[in-house]
Amino acid sequence: MARSRWGASWLSRGRPDHPPVVFAAKIDNAMRLVALDALAERIGLKRGQGAAEARAMCPSLDMIAADPAADQAFLEALADWCDRYTPLVALDGKDGLFLDITGCAHLHGGEKGLVSDVLSRLFALGVEARATVSSSAGLSWAAARYGHAHVIAPEEADRVLAPLPVAALRLPEEAAAALERVGLKEIGDLLEAPRAPLARRFGSLLLLRLDQARGQADEPLSPRLPVPSFSAERRLAEPLIDEEHILELTRHLAKDVRSSLERQGEGGRLFELLLFRVDGRVFRVKAHAAVALNDAERIAALFRERLQAVHDDLDAGYGFEILRLAVLRSERLDPAQQDFSGVPDESQPLAAFVDKVSARFGPDCLMQAAFAESHLPERAGGFVPLRNIAAVMDAPAEGKTFPENRPLRIFAHPEPVEATAEVPEGAPRSFNWRKTRYRVTRAEGPDRIAAEWWVDGEDHPTRDYFRVEDQEGRRFWLFREGLYEREVTSARWFMHGVFA
Image (cartoon, rainbow, N blue to C red; front, side, top):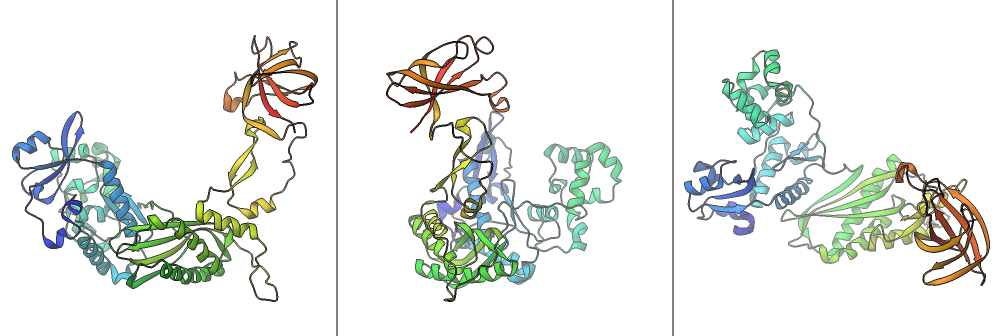
């Protein structure tokens, strides 16, 4: 709200002379405060307070309707921005982020330097934030929200936790209130207390949260995005705006990624180019490859097509300050023999065509026919996105052949017809289809296909298929749905395909 109303530099310029700002939402059929700024907290307003009571305390209160979707989108954008520090970024509820900076802090001047850089950059972007680095997520959560320390050594965990309220242990409100009622208001009151009575009275969650905050219990973080297998990055002294310069730098990044791929004998199938704009916005451009790639020129060519496709949506603004090329999915890539000219093998023009078209129009623009594990004709095959050329070229054909007694043209949805036939299992003598009457001169069948009870249910009727030919020599594929006197009393007929 502050950024949109007062600009991104409102923190550096100082808060304007404006009434306290709060956000309200309907909770239990009553309007209550769900968020408030520092000025509103200083005058005594609290989360969960009734909106009418808050208005009575401060008549000039600026009350805004809460927008959870917008809050979530902003938090996701901040998480993207934090990718500049580490790829291991996890969401912490609706108002926080966890960053696993193991092995990354030295790239930013150590832990203190990283915290200082994060907070100063967010301050310049107009975002009020608090951050803490520690050996456990629970300790960082508690200190960032209720304490003042920026960097906590493992041996200082108990000293930092002791004066904090029990709510800093991420307990439910009911549990925190129950602890306060018996005089256990600070975490220090729990550190030396007997564990067994605490567990019996307040549950095992209290001890788990306490151990997590002290670093005595593991608490793995789940990154919001998959961690790339390989990546290369450039931090620029001057922001880039021109698309050609971006593509040239992407080619250099592809060379760095290729070195990593070659050492592991891998080739990339899914690449992502991250563009960090100076105002904090992050653009993610993905490119799929039809075959495993480690050639820098072909990788750069993929993003040339992708950038042309997203040209209108890629607003460089004041420029991009960080570019990162990541490999999100890779496969084993066996080295290929080159010819005497030294030119890499280009014997797969189909793969190059698929890469170019997919990069321009999206990965699902090309489709391929594929078999499916089903004995019902309309489910036995279909079209899937053409993404893996190697699998298509090398797929064995044994056991997956088209039945000779079925037409080449099969309708996706059988069309009802009116047919006259002998019961109980006779072929049709004549039928009406698409307002035209056909008289049958020859017929073969029936070919019986039972229903897929695990999909359609046990009561789904059986089908009897017939191949018929009319007086004009036209051949059709019809089926009768339901067995007389066993499944139905009046069967229905459907047209499912036509022969060439």
